[in-house]
Image 1 (cartoon, rainbow, N blue to C red):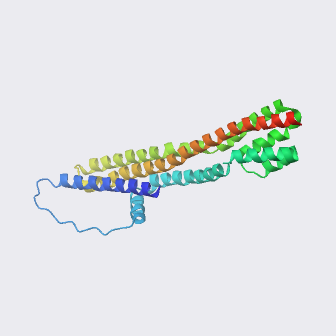
Image 2 (tube, rainbow, N blue to C red; image 1 turned 60 degrees about the vertical axis):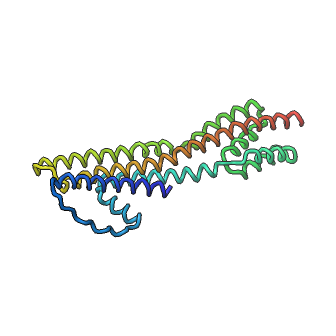
Image 3 (cartoon, rainbow, N blue to C red; image 1 turned 90 degrees about the horizontal axis):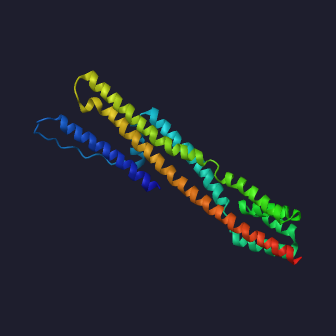
Length: 253
């Protein structure tokens, strides 16, 4: 992930540098003399990133940074929650079945209570409604499953919003920067690289940083979707096996 961010940022910086070089060459006209460019002092990635961030302007760059901060905060919380919600369903089913055979419903409920995750919560709810019949057990499992799915998807709409918002803010910064550049040209009455450099710089940098933020959050978002699908599939498959275990337990009593 860090390498991807570094590559995208460096690509944006290089694009900006090449654009300025080309612009300066166009403004040089028919001059045949060339000057040797002194070798640039090598800077660290963090220093370059900081300088380019400041050069992009505090307004739009600050808002884009906030989308990254809030998006990452929600993503980290979801990452922890979804990983804690992952359960080895086969192992849990074996424990529940063994507890039913040896200690009955109460022992199986203790096993589910000691196991984190939505699957264990569904099993506990089913065991808690066992005395009311298997039909009630199935209905309670379906109802609780819908509630737990909503908890798994909590916060994803905000991540999706920040994914869409970051590049839009970047493009808005591009438009504002270009408007400022054309205003400077109109005021000066001629086209000069020094006149439009600041506006073009804001235009390019806000777009690059907005896209970088969107890419980072999009990776997290797609991972969350895949993780939620995996957990839901485990919930559905294990619930079928759980009902079968309860059916065998009831018939064997």
